[in-house]
Amino acid sequence: MNFSHLRKDFPTLCEDNPPAYLDNACVTLKPQQVIDSISDYYTKYPGCGGRSVHSYGTQVSRLVQQSRKSLAKFINADSVNEMIFTSNTTNSLNQVAKGLSWDEGDIIITGDREHNSNLVPWLQLKQEFGIDLIVVKSNSDNTFNMQNFEEACSQAGDKLKLVSMSHIGNLDGVKIPIKEITKVTHDYNALISVDGAQSTPHMKVDVKDLGIDFLSFSIHKMCGPSGMGALWGREELLENMRTIKAGGQTITSTTYDSVEWAKPPAKFEGGLGNFAGMIASGSAIDYLSKLDMDSIHAHEVQLNRIMTDGIKHLNGIEIIGPEKPEMRSGICSILMNDLPAHDIAILLDEAAGVMVRSGHHCVNSWFNDRGHTDGSLRASTYFYNTEEEAKLFVDTFCEAVEAFS
Ligand SMILES: Cc1ncc(COP(=O)(O)O)c(C=O)c1O
Image (cartoon, rainbow, N blue to C red; front, side, top):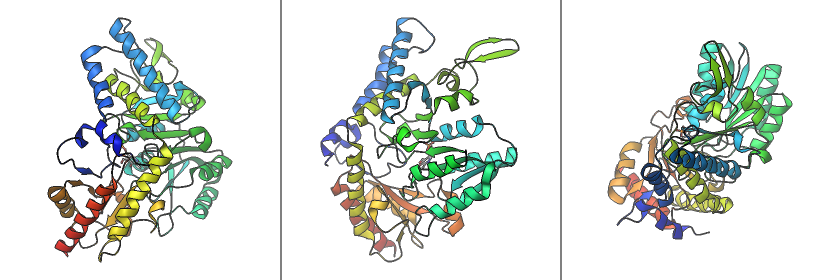
């Protein structure tokens, strides 16, 4: 499917000489519809939702609830009350980490290609509560090793409390079999938290079909406003989970020595919120809901195929993950070995407006383990990217590698 007719919705793509923006795993561009929603909040009804009963307040409450409904529908949640607005995936995962109850010796399992947001909260629990963390080793091409996972679960036994895995890795675009992982996790009566930062924007994610317990994602990676994310959790789990944002909005009543907690989602959204962000999140989700997620995925794989085929012959570089682009979604992450990744990233932008990411992509643990201390150069696509942009990346990257060799 060709999505190029949608480029007109994105102001940055309508400028003269628009960039070939290939840093979508970090943050995506915003369509005018989302920008208008933000502006409408500040210019037309800049009030406080959920509390004030004047017309600004009522309008904001209505739009926030509409936005929450769009999000719930997008991931096929059972109830709108299961949808919590957060500031990003990091915030959502920290709510899970600090909201559940832990005993010393409890075991959490995670993967060996995780973003720091799905590693550091567990390491913090290890430091502070004495929980144990098992890191499951992937295959040598970074694909998921089910046997290693099952062995880790068996080693943990009844101490296993939580499995937290990224659905698609931002390091390499590799997708892991969440449904099968969930089944094994539940066989051990443990919970499963999914870091959906790289899957929810790019493919159909159905929380009921996957059977998972928590899903964390970032709305700024799906055309939404910066600093907006969401946490979905099964209602009964959320009802029993501690909030990490205790305060206004999170209670139904207090006395000087007692608190009566509000039901989710209010319990988790303490303090005056980013209403412009919440409302514009709904606009972003409504925008994506009109597109076919399978076609988005197929389009990104096609762009990745162009990038992969165009650079794989170069000496001195190595694409992280499996050879086949269809196993790396829209992400082409390249180990530069002796070549300077940052300098090449700057050159691509200055010479041709090709914007990519260089460094460790917050997956320091994977690079440190393998001794690739300089990280990688990563091109990551979205539906508005074109085949011409993928070819431009190939041409400029090949020239840059030659220039630095
Ligand atoms: C897989 C994954 N998890 C977590 C995060 C953290 O997202 P955020 O910075 O929006 O909290 C990212 C960001 O790139 C990611 O790719």
